[in-house]
Length: 337
Ligand code: FAQ
Image 1 (cartoon, rainbow, N blue to C red):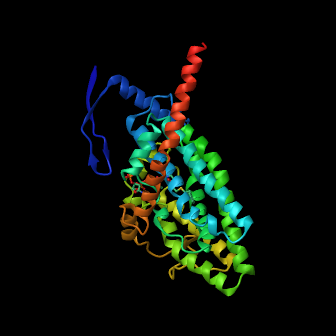
Image 2 (cartoon, protein in one colour; image 1 turned 135 degrees about the horizontal axis):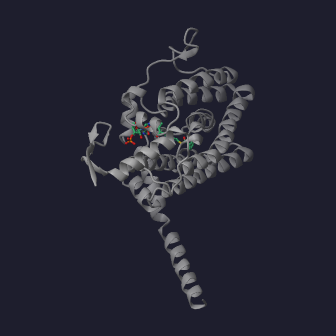
């Protein structure tokens, strides 16, 4: 029996076709909402509304893509690290990002979409990944600044996701956040050494890197809350726990003091402590740049996507060989069974 209620699944202004829901579905959804309200975690086998599944798949797969595309800007410097110690640290960090991508693809797969489908969406430009990875890494100091600022912003955004209502995502995030915290510290440490023991040229290089990455890092948190079409529903479902603007503010408040310890300035003349708000005020973000980069027209979008597609194509023989081996093994165990 169907209720006559029409469910207008509207998202970001795009109205989907009206959906008729059965009385049973309405009841399941009410039960689901009650579980969310009670702070329960949802497991892969549990019933969930289709829109919840799609929202999670969108966010987790974008996050996974960000981790693996995020290996590229730093990978660029592995062969040029200044010492063996820094090279070993950078290698481990880039490898960790690959691992994060794998945990996240695995979490996304529990929602019923295959890894091949997710890769296809990335390679054909249908899926997004974080805007930050479309900027070039021009000097060694960029490695420190990515650790300090980009990983710092990632941690600020990702710690609340450890309490995401979808348990497989939350579990993946616990491990990821532990590793991100090492990433942030190694970046800060590398900059600290250059700022406290380095030559003037090294200090200038650090300042130049901070100037280039600051605003792009603030954009990582996404559009302002009033321009964020997904936030309200994601907050309602406990997928997002803290809003884009609140996280951005927390990041600025924490980072200004770290910049003072490092001895670098942040490239924002409007940055100052607001006694009344008990927060730092900061200048206007150039949202037209953000949307240009998200839309595919940033400084390195084509290069990044090109590198991922090439890696996928170059790796075809490995996948083919692994599949051939697996089917031979399966055949052998069938014969001996
Ligand atoms: N870049 O309605 P909202 C890392 C899109 S991992 C590109 O606010 P939502 C580790 C958004 O997808 C960094 N697109 O969206 C690392 C949506 O488009 P859609 C990645 C962006 O989902 C460090 C539209 O704008 N972290 O750094 C961006 O509620 C160093 C409207 O936005 C995560 O993915 C952006 N910056 O909130 C690796 C964390 N911002 O999908 C290597 C998990 C927004 O409707 C080296 N993700 N958009 O077509 C999240 O927390 C959320 O997805 C947000 C966006 C906060 C990113």
